[in-house]
Image (tube, rainbow, N blue to C red; front, side, top):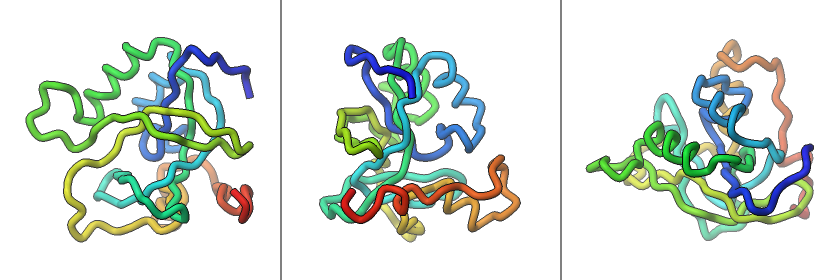
Length: 162
């Protein structure tokens, strides 16, 4: 893992922006962000059809698995991602809202990071109980677009005390 700069804001991604999803929007993170590692966010994750949506949860056992990036050009990156996520200021009915929340790296370090949260009502969407969208896709679609044969189970790696 590369060294971090505390003056660069962080971003937590849990769906199509993760590395192994291989979406073209991840290229923005490759160019303008520094990967910090995998981590956990306290929330619930839902399958919204062709992408996931995260919501806050007060239950500490509700965890979402994702990746944490430090943004070198935060204003530029967030402006592009806001448009991609449909939460830019001109959007009359946003699907997501960007807010800062506490996330935890697997080494136990907690930090504040931007995260895109689903802000519409949850109606009949499928809960992803383990909170890992890539793992969910791999099991739902064994020959999915994911490039790995078997993704690790980060919650198992972290252990019960995380």
